[in-house]
Image (tube, rainbow, N blue to C red; front, side, top):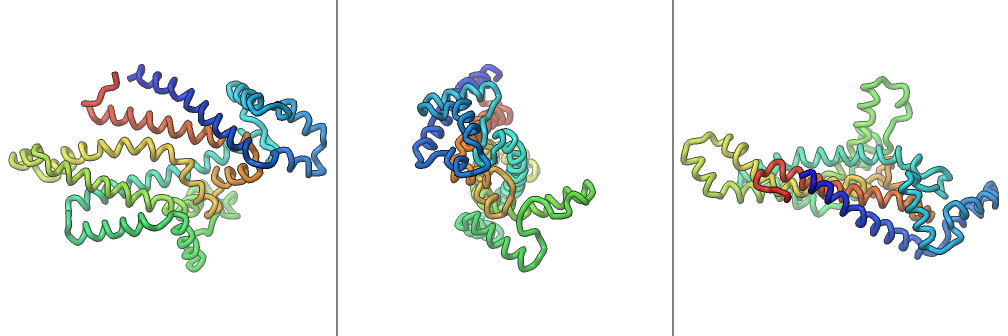
Length: 321
């Protein structure tokens, strides 16, 4: 397993390099210059702009700029944000944590609800419970998450039951420890639910199909003929095998933790990477865009690797040689 993990990590290096090169080329192909906004600002001196050009080779060709950025990355330097006028790492470290909180809450909510719903629907196949769950899934799959977020925000504005946006209340700093946690949870409710509904609908349908397939296998019929309790058959034998294909989806879910929440963050005013990425692209803040894309690529590769490892752990038939 360790040899496999090391091999996958080594393979991920050229893949990340390819992602970074494509992102850099696309950003360079867009019209405008990321130093134009600085030149229009009377508070920014021409000497400072000249220093940035020399430091990052902005006065040279595209490939010279790219290899300068790549060299700085290996040294732990993420670059300079031309829009926020600070180091990229100082901006991203706080926004990354906020995005991770939202995405992790959505991830846990999705799987905690989808798996039991899928099992429940499979055990009540074609009766009223199953039909109700499937109807709700069709409705959820057909509703875009951003539209649901706007509906929930409108409902919150009419009822006052939940905050309308942001991550903290104005009096957040005056609250106690548990009060601060509760305040964040209230602000987290609408974006997390809006982000989870579609995933819950899709995953429960997959789980239902897997359970129905496993429950129709001959070894399940043999277990029932031996008089094993139904709960043991369902949750010990059937569920363990039905959930194996779902584990492969964990990698894709993990990789979408940062990227999937971007639009919801913008709509709900959640201070994460979504609004930051939008501002960076619009202002051609190239090093901020590069850092965000690299994080998304790294999350995708790490997520797939974790899914493969988890699948090997739960299924003894799988070995990576």
